[in-house]
Every structure is written in structure tokens, then in C-alpha cells.
Amino acid sequence: MDVRPEVSSAELPDRSVTARSAARQDGEVSVRKQMVLMVVFAVILFVMALYVDRRLRPPDTGWFAYAPNTSSVFESHADSPTVARALVWLNAAAVWGLTGLVVLRKGKGR
Image 1 (cartoon, rainbow, N blue to C red):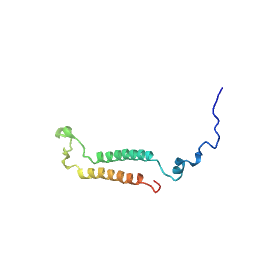
Image 2 (cartoon, rainbow, N blue to C red):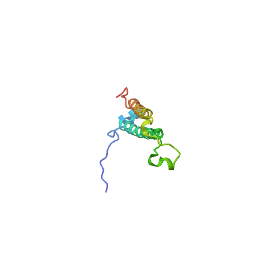
Image 3 (cartoon, rainbow, N blue to C red):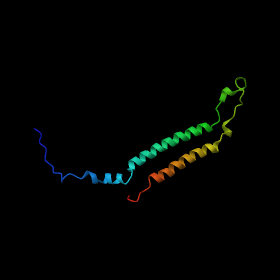
Image 4 (cartoon, helix red, strand yellow):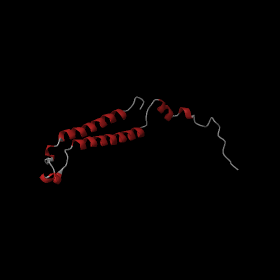
């Protein structure tokens, strides 16, 4: 036998007018979701910057580039495009930081 207390509909909260649904109707995203979006965006930017950084590095021929085995001359990493590589990481950090400021800024109702 199932014995449940009877609850009138007047005692139940109106689900259509809750704080969550009101916030979602305004188009706001919760802070947790914003943080997850920022972490995902950081990972995407990191992978992109890492790819560009790897493409800017000169080829590492090392020991195998001595005269009998190749026609290319060994180039040291001293003349690698260090400034360009630094600018890639600086730009990635700046884009992430500015995006964080826009996404995580306090809205009018907060």
C-alpha cells in the first residue's frame, strides 16, 4: 500500500517563475559555464599557438646534418625567430585575457 501525503498545488512552487528560468530568459550564462568556456578556449588557443610556434622553429637537423649525409648546412638555433615566437604566445595570452574580460564581466543585473 502506497501512503503519500497529499500536497495541494498551492503549496508547490511555480516552476515557470524561478530565479534560474528568469536568468536564462535574459540570455545570461551561469558563472560555472563561463569558466568552462574560458578553460576550453584557453586549451584551443594553446594548441593553436603551439602549432604556430612549432612551424616557426628552424628544422633541427642536429648530428645527422654533417657533410657526408646531406647537402644542407647545419643551422644553429641562435638565429631562430625568437621574437616572432614570443609574439605568438603574447598574442594568444592577450586574446585569451581580453576574451575573459568580456565573457566574465559583471552584467547590469548582477
